[in-house]
Image 1 (tube, helix red, strand yellow):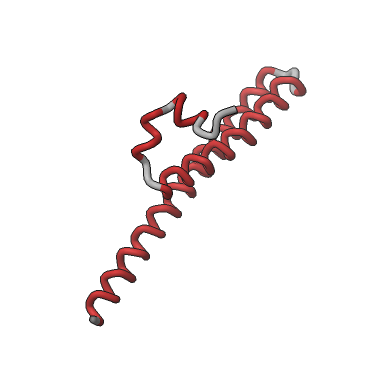
Image 2: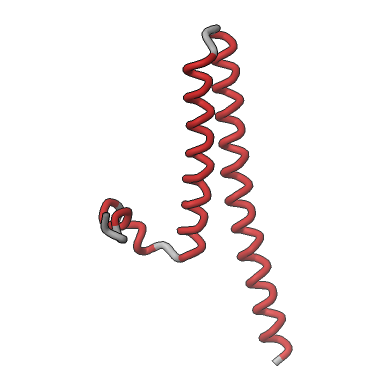
Length: 91
């Protein structure tokens, strides 16, 4: 397999910086685990009501994990910008 396999499939990813790429990889990892949970629920739980509740819970966990990833990136950007500004002011 080519090293640029994902970029060949999605050339728009080339314009992203490393932080965005790292965030996308984290979200893909979260989605992988959450999809595994959904598959487990789909194959294991026979009761429709209980399965619906479990799937809704997994969707809420996924949304929360994505929010944490986005907020972490925002905080890192703000911290870096603040540190850079302080360093410039000292010079």
